[in-house]
Amino acid sequence: MNILIINPPAYKGKEYIREGRCMQMKGSWSSLWPPLTLTYINAILRKEGHNVKLIDATADKLDYKDLKDKIIKFRPQAIVINTGFPSVKGDLELSRIAKSIDQGVKTIAIGMFPTT
Image (tube, rainbow, N blue to C red; front, side, top):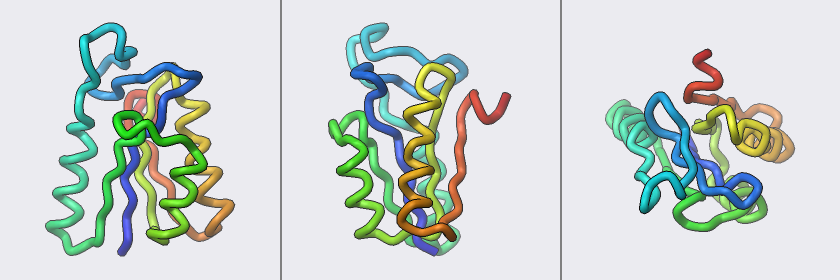
């Protein structure tokens, strides 16, 4: 299965770190943290034989149009999106984009917002 794992882009111009129990803006720390949770998920899915691609849109300064192009090119059957309370509206826009390309794609949100 093709699975696309995405750390979403900056939301309203703010770069968020979506790791751990608290979500903070980049300004709270000197730099962005790597999306470790997403890399763990990536490794597990690869080990299980899936074709997985990880995109850190925040670090790569990608916007939703860039991500739409990547979704079209990769043609995933599932998308994993990291999200949190301050950015959930923007983060879940990726689900709407993916569904506009392929209604059958499974979208999976992880993080404090969906866990709560």
